Amino acid sequence: MHRLLLIFSLALFFSCGESRDSKTSGTRNILENLSYSIDTVVVDPGDEIINIKRGARFSTVSLDAQKYYYYDYDKTSIHEIDLETLKLTDTHQFSKEGPNSIGFNPPKIQPLSDERFLFVSSGINVGTFNKKGEKEKSLKFNFREIEGLEEEGEGLITYNAQISENEKLLFALTRPDMVSSDVRLIIIDPDTKTGKSISLPEFIPTLNFKIRLQTEKEVWGVGEGVNLKILKDQLFISSTTNSDTYIYDYHSDSLRLVEFPHQLVPDRKIAEVKNKVEDKAEFYAEWAKFKYQISFAEFLWDKERQQYFRFAYQLIPRDDPNLEDKSEVFLFAYDKDLNLIGESQLENVEYRFQSPFFKDGKLYSYVNVEDELGFAVFTFDFEEK
Image 1 (cartoon, rainbow, N blue to C red):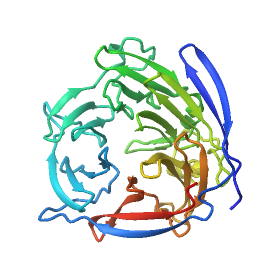
Image 2 (cartoon, rainbow, N blue to C red):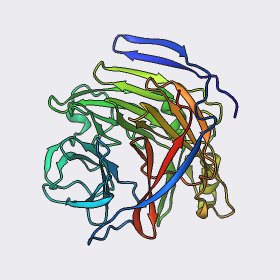
Image 3 (cartoon, rainbow, N blue to C red):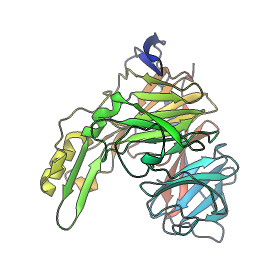
Image 4 (cartoon, helix red, strand yellow):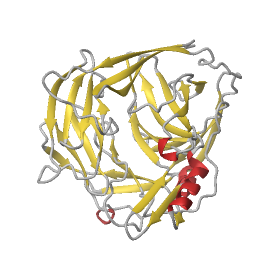
């Protein structure tokens, strides 16, 4: 692997204006000689049955990485797993209807302090809940009821919603199907029902990578997305289509853009895509223009190393598109200040990590072990300094 020229720029956006700064980190690639081992572990469910037919895409891990919360969409329940003993310790029941409804759409779940959760059902509901399934606070707002928002869009503010660690601010994004010319971060003070939005110009090209096919009998749609994630008391805003990342520090109300000069992969998808098509053949043809290009995942924080990590994937084509499930897998490392310090392709790894997280310096990723809930546990060995 070639050694890296690790340079990135920081663009700072404040209420008083915009400034730019740039800095250079060292040229060492700490992942150049990366090696790893993999252990597969299985959760002991006791006398219970954990339904894993939908995988772990709705699941999450506690803030202290001691508990894994596996969400069963069919039963609207969370299975609580102790990550030290790998045993099922409790099951928490929730409801899709009634006064404690979490909503009908598949939820995005954010773990909160004191074993509580933020449930986000896109287009339907946002609220905090305790593990008894009781709604503590509704955070379901309409654009029109938040003073300070200038968007013309109507409807609920739920798209990719997250809440700050102190639970004083709610964040969301403008819906790509409602606003096609801009991507904006929405910031709301739930107590005062005031807010503002900030444009994210680097992610506007993400809106081009979407395709819709509508017939009399069915609707098909695919597209790339922008994600929000709270890490180390800051909001990370990232896109699947490029490596650039916005960091919003809500304590200082400042937004910065971090650009990474990756040498191993392209830094973004590039294609001219027809957004509305007439038949399935055209649908697949347009999708092929970008689905085989690089795709970036969300950032992960390794508390043990005090480093950030991120995966990227490049789908491997097959004769039958319906059987395409393997990808080239890339791993990137960043220091605590988000300087890019390493990148490597993971040889002999072909599948995307599902709901990955770090615990005690090891990477955990959900796996199905003969229809039992399990984890692939990666131990990475590399020069860390």
